[in-house]
Length: 254
Image (cartoon, rainbow, N blue to C red; front, top):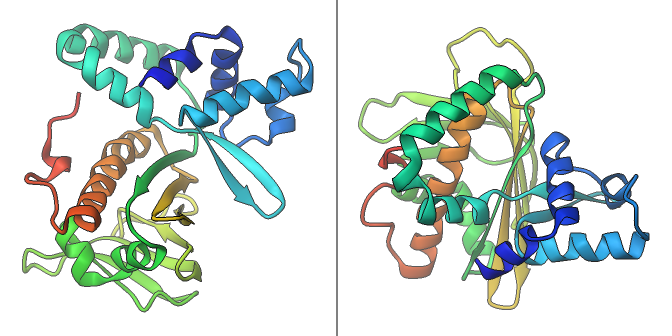
């Protein structure tokens, strides 16, 4: 957490984070526009944010896009704020949301580091039995581009809570799927899209989950709670051989 506090202490770096909050997924040139400093100095500020894990970089073709990573700030909030300020902050947050009335839903990006190889992470994402173990649902598909996939309950009901289609599959490093969490409802817009990017580095991998084209704040809030919980359970399974003692998504939200 020291690196996060150090990064947040500088007003220029806070400005860069505000810009990403307003428009996530910017190139370095876009992010550094209209800053009253040399480009090299601005780049150094971005590098500090990346090293602090407050910003993550996702390659799209030749471009490097910068996204907010909520994990470090979430950890700070959980440690020092959540238990003491829940009621007041919740009320203030509700007032702020009603006042701002955002119309553009940002892309959600979450990054975690796992002691595993890419093949193990790929299998954990695509094997129905493994997903049933750490996610509470079996992800069922042949994972070929164009195929459908289902997020199927394992309580014996066979109910399907999420459906989608495989857009891209490049084992073991990249999987792109659509994500429809109301399969029975009439679609109101194009489905949201989830990208899993698995990047190896010696004995670990960096797993980046990008969830974009979100329809509303309600879904953004839901996945902001859901993805950290699911990925924590996946990480535990791969590193220790077992999931967490309790299902993390069952913890009350703050």
